[in-house]
Length: 130
Image (cartoon, rainbow, N blue to C red; front, side, top):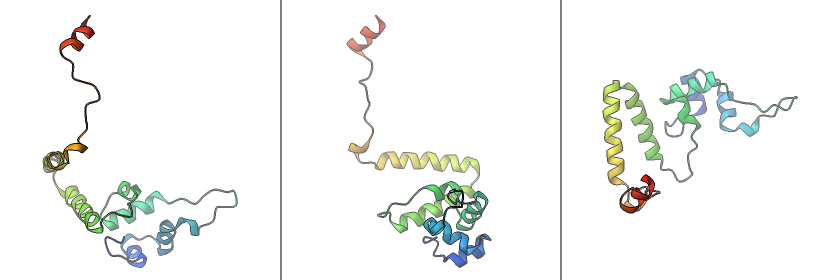
């Protein structure tokens, strides 16, 4: 919502979800448990409407943002996801392959996963075959 620069009221109009519901989703502690003690929960249909209004998938709303996350990166991620969804399947596959290659090439060397066991060969291979 912040990345899209929308108020609760504007998001309500875009999504068709009541502004009070959006407010409750943003601050669930405002709602009291029912008489039976059941905690209130979001309606999946409303969450899907909100996600569509924000140009994202409902699952993307489940991932908490860290305090230090750059708003610019978040905005780019939302834009990239929207563009990705509009591409034909073949183009999505190509883009995903390219993104993996760029990601792998730009990771610092010390962050690359290290093998958990030495490769099979020499003495070790002989002992396993015995």
